[in-house]
Image (cartoon, rainbow, N blue to C red):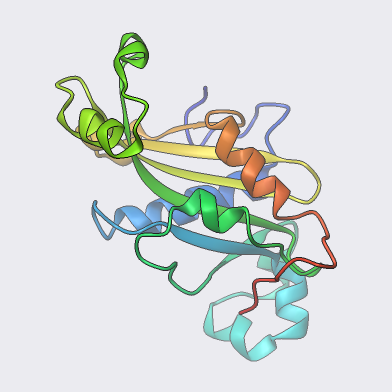
Length: 192
């Protein structure tokens, strides 16, 4: 794990890390108990070229565009539908360089795994009532090139200096995000 602003790790794509951290900062401004969100990550240089008026409104220019990704928030997800379910049903069009998701979850200590009930409703209740639970906000992103980056913020340590970053912090979510970037001619596409 690295400091969230340290992108010197060999495996970290600086453009992806910067986009994930930008999303994390933006979401943090809204506080906790927010719904899951999904973002397309587009090559900023291509955005400036294709949509100059939009790029201008966003304060982007050709110089700032080189080697960066711009997060584009997608329509709000259907309330009650788990993010993981949404990710299993979408693919991104080829012009999308990557994607990112934001989700809040309860995390239990390692010793609690054996006591979690099999029934999903009871498991959720068990997690909500566990005295050692931690609330965490996860921002995870991937690119078509295979890069991955995550930023995690615990509610108990809700300050920018306590955000933890790394390329493999939430492997299951990263895999689901990566699968949405594989071209599937029969699958539905997310469009903006």
